[in-house]
Amino acid sequence: MKALFIGGTGTISTAITKQLLEQGCELYLLNRGNRNNQLPEGAIILEADINDEAYIASLIESHDFDVVADFIAFEPSHLERDFRLFNGKTKQFIFISSASAYQTPLSDYRITEGTPLANPYWKYSRNKIACEDYLLKQYREYGFPITIVRPSHTYDKRSVPLGVHGRKGSWQVIKRMMENKPVIIHGDGTSLWTMTHNRDFAKGFIGLMGNIHAIGESVHITSDETVTWNQIYGIIADALGVKLNAVHVASEFLDACSSEDFRGGLIGDKANSVVFDNSKLKRLVPEFVATTRLDQGIKETLQFIMAHPEYQVEDLEFDLWCDRVIEALQDTLNRLNG
Image 1 (tube, one colour):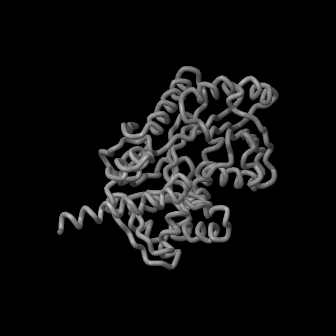
Image 2 (cartoon, helix red, strand yellow):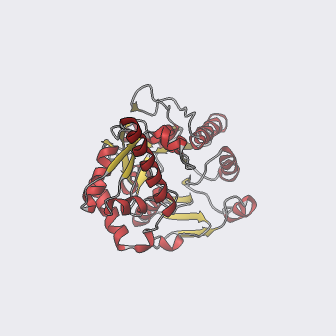
Image 3 (cartoon, helix red, strand yellow):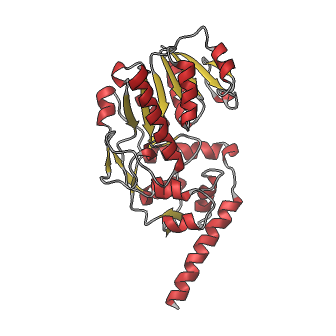
């Protein structure tokens, strides 16, 4: 198989890249070269800016691909560019959308690919929906061979998956746990969530590549394991060997007192209970099964982070914000109960 990935070095795509190279795929990666030193050997690097359309067209002029996948398209103009570049140049074009595009709030907690797409809370999700609409139009009118993939919360060894964190990643929450400081969990922590290790995601994704039955289809790829946010934070604390000191805070309050996009990331996504039905994926890729249980994946991630100081990036601004939020809640309780 001859494939081209636009991106190829992110959380989702890194595992796919690694597994494809192990399988002997002729894999081209088109990106700016910022993280290519972290890739395994074997990929053919096309170092360029995908937005330099004329140059990209010259780079791929003599190539045709079995699969082209864009991991960094976030708005319709990106897909319009891709259509101009790859229409007639690939047998399959895979767009990485998002499970956050599904109806929010849900009318049924069980999500299938037939669940409506609508998210009034998060511009990111609305842009992904618009991207899907554009591609479906190209498929219907011009036969552009699309497959739409919708990941949910996917993680790897470099960052612990969380609900509430700062702009610099997960380390500050880990550090607060180790210091026995209170850690914020959105809502009451009982909403249901699904987290998928990128190794498992890669197995499903690769099964869709070159799959004629996936053309024109939308498919989400997630684990079948469902956990609550209280369980997620408890798993992290257990892996660290500490007692969890949790403070539950309403998502609306967190959004109101932060410059982070918690309206989108929480109210439009993680605050809602979601359970994914992966029946469609398993029909298309019968061998797919997610095998990394969350507690196993979290333990592996923490071991990696502890062994690599470059991923222990402190976020003092977020740390102080957590203290202020928790102090404000405690002051309110003291006044009400005083």
